[in-house]
Image 1 (cartoon, rainbow, N blue to C red):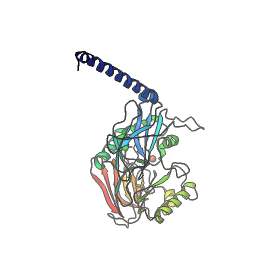
Image 2: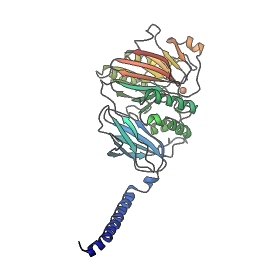
Image 3: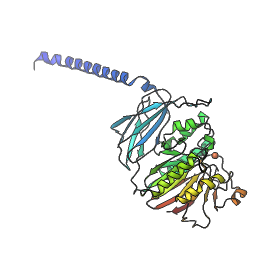
Image 4: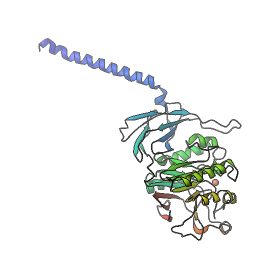
Length: 409
Ligand SMILES: [Fe+2]
C-alpha cells in the first residue's frame, strides 16, 4: 500500500463512521415517529396485573395516565423475544348518574398460543419506563396439582392489607390463582380507594391472576369493577361468573344482586353447577361470594343464601364455599362431619384481609347450625392445594402461623 493511501485511510474510515452514525440516527428518529412520541411519555398508574389464565392464554392489564400503545414483550426468559399488542379503552361512567370514573387509560393484552403449565417472563414496553420483569404461569392439565389463595375484606386498614399481601407472597410464593371474597375497597365509588388497592396488591397480582367477588362496599362502583377486571363473560350482569382451572370448577356469585329462586343469577348458578357436576374432567367445585351463608361473626349468616343457594351446593357436591363480610376467619360445617377430613360442603368465612377485625357474636353463634367452634379474629389468608382427589387447606395468620387446617376430597 502506498504512502498516499495510508494517509487517506483514517479520513475515509472517519467519513464512513459519520455516515453510519447519521444513518442510524435517522432510523432511530423514524422509529420514534412511527411509535408516536406519546409512547415514551406514558406512565403506568396501575399494574401490570394478571387476569383470566388458561392452559394456553392469559390477559395482562394495566392503566396509564395518557394514551399509549398496548404492548407487552414476553418469552421464556428475560430476553423475551416475542411482542403482542392489545387494546386500550377508558372506563365509562353510568349514563343515569354522576358516579366518578377513572380518568386513566386501561390496557388489555391477550396472549394466546402458550404452553400449559409453563412460566413466562413479561414486560409492558409501550411506556416511558417499562415495567419491571415479571412472570406468569399458564394453567396445567387436569392431572396436575395447583395452589390457590383466598382472602377478602381488604378495605380500610391499608397497613394491615399490606401485611396480608406480604404474608401471601412470603408464605405461598406465586399462587396459581387468587380468589377474593369481596369488599376489596372501602367504597367502590372512591377512585383513591381503587388506587390504594392496586398499589398494595401489585406485588401479588403481577404474578398471580385475580378472580374477585363483588362485595357490598363495591356498590356504586360496578362500572369500575367491570372496567378494571377482565372476567369471564358468561353471565348477564357481568358481576357473577365461573371458570375451570385444572380439575376444578370455580363459581363466583354476586350476593349484591338477586340470587333467590327464579332469578337470572339463580337459574344460571343452577345450570352452571349441574354442568360442572356432570363434567368428567371436573373433580372439585369451589364457590366464592361475599355474604356468608353461615357465620358466627358480627353480621351473622344469611337466611336467603341458606334457603336458595345452599341446596344447590349440596346437590352438586360443592367442596368448599368461601365468603367474607365478617372480618374474621371461621370454618362452618355440619357438626356431624369429621373435623380433620369433613365430607360434604365446608363453609369458610375469610374476611381478615385488612378491614377492622370482628369478634365472635354469641347470639349469631347460637343461631349458626354449622358452628364448630373454629373462629379466629385475626388477619389471615387461606391456602388451598388441589392434587387429584385431595384438597388440603391451610389458613395462615400474618405471622406465618397456621390457625386452621383440614383436608377433604
Ligand atoms: Fe361486606
